[in-house]
Length: 264
Image (cartoon, rainbow, N blue to C red; front, side):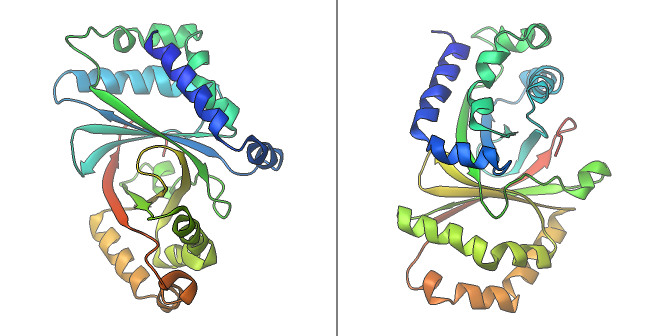
């Protein structure tokens, strides 16, 4: 079985594990998006240019033609195991996301423009491994938001945060906590809020992942200080509903820089 067939089959199997009635309900309302977050593990050297060319000239344009836009592409700046490329793919429906790989296999322009990447020899692979997670957007933040700095083509940095919970019940309370005021507190602190995703399929479940943005690292520190000192946050985090036991058991925080071809 080749890689494209395997990915298509794997994603199709993933779809069976998701509550399709919820998908149908959300799609009917034009509501919550689905996200695939990929991490490409790479080696330093000439192959990184091959990956960048493939993303910029083949994969991202092809995904855009399927209605998946904007696509985020980020290099890991602060975090373990660099170099790594993160690709954030939003989709209006689960069907669009699940069938993307199968459609790419018949997209002649994609195959032509991506030939060097797709046919990279085993002794010089384009990347080492790819990890993937499937998420659904939070009800209170149903669409990905592009920061104003992107349109202005000005400097911006992204923080990708994943919260693992000790149980499904604790995970649900953490999601509830965001909907109980945490979104607003992030906004008051001045963060650009990109997306919030509840992980359906991926490693280390249950967990959620969200992304924030800001002009630079000094701004990030200032905004987190404003967030933590906000009286509304202090009240929320002290609420018996969210404080009687630990609802987050581990936090992973990564700093990402957008590539030149990122649409976010």
